[in-house]
Image (cartoon, rainbow, N blue to C red; front, side):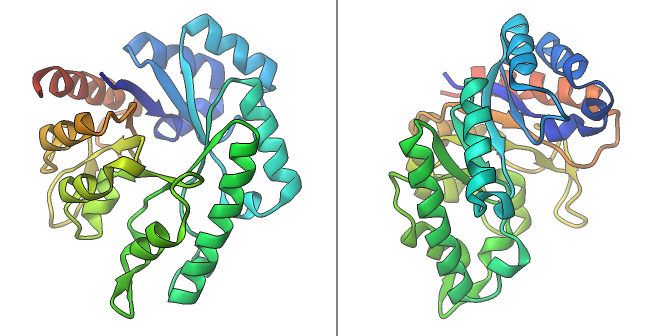
Amino acid sequence: MAKIGLQLYTVRDEAEKDFFGTIKKVAEVGYEGVEFAGYFGASSRELKKVLNETGLEAIGTTIPMHDLVDDKKLEESITYSKEIDCPIIICPILPQEYRGSETVCNKAAEIFNSVGEKCNNSGLKFLYHIHGVEFETFNGKTGMEILMEKTDPEKVRFELDVYWVEYAGVDSVQYLKKYGKRCPLIHFKDMKNRVDKHDTEVGEGVIDIPALINQAKKFNVGWYIVEQEEFNVPPMESIVISYKNLEKYSERTS
């Protein structure tokens, strides 16, 4: 059964004020792991100590594209990740210069293959977080199809974000059904409705969460990761709602 984690970007304001205290509160909710979007100046030794104390696993860490293409910064990120036993480095989104044409999508795929190889050589995995911006079509193919076709499955895997895929007008259940073998992590957030497309807590919107979990189980997805950007309730209350709903759906589906 998959574990439930939290992308700490969800509680970014709280983490900026009290990084370690926020991590401890996340563990108290019941989450089993955390995905990082920055370390707020914490040393790897300090962070590893807090993870050990809370029993939380480091799922992955997001590193922006401009740092991935900088050999020194990539090496620093790999070193830090290994020091906190974090097995995955994730590119969170394609910058504007890697969107808009087949040529730049091919270039992004080339970079991902290179980064993935460097991560693999260091004992880590590399993923790209699908953010919805990749579904523009060029010569009959979407940017996402180009990335899938032009990246080596052994070097580059993907983190499916069900909300952003749906935001782009793509059925996330069918997408997972097609590409689940390459998606070891899934970001779960829900969509309040399909008019203003405001994101909301898992299980409180229109995305078919049970169907997604059914598909995820077929592919042995390791982590269901809650992430949310906008809120109608305080973030620390929001992550409790999403956790409880995701846990409930995970237990009920088969």
